[in-house]
Image (cartoon, rainbow, N blue to C red; front, side, top):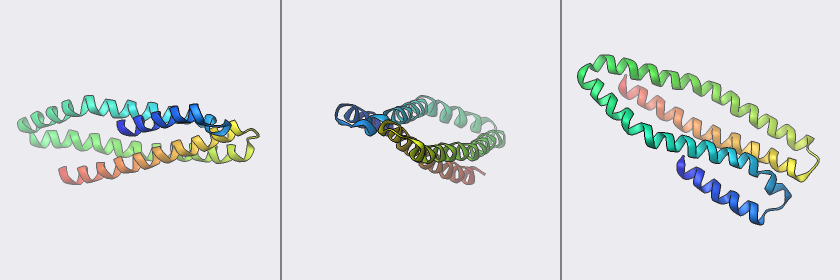
Amino acid sequence: MLIVGVIVFLASILAWRNGGEMLRGMLIPLGVIVLISTGYGGLMQVTRPAHATAFAQRYQQDPEGAKAVEIARVENDCTNYRMMNFIWSTICIAGIALIFLAGSGTWKGVALGLILLSSVGFVADNFLHHRAKAYLKAIA
């Protein structure tokens, strides 16, 4: 996710320098993609090693208790996946509606950016959800 954020950031710089009205309109949703990707990716870089270490220590002391806590955490993540799919779908529908309602090229760029934002979010969340389900199957 961190790499995606950096790539989109570099693309945004190119769009700002060389882009037309529509491409500049996409910069707001692209900025949101950068913030989400780098924020989530950075958070995972910081918290994942500590979580893995804590889980390993809990597992050494109480294997069944550690599994139960981890299964509950992953099931909560899977529940959040359904809500995020609704959010990404709503953003996509808003982007599609804005394409037809927008008059200027800037707003059409914002609409295309919203569709791109929802697509990136949907793909990333689906990848993370399938990874979580495989992890859940492995620890259950």
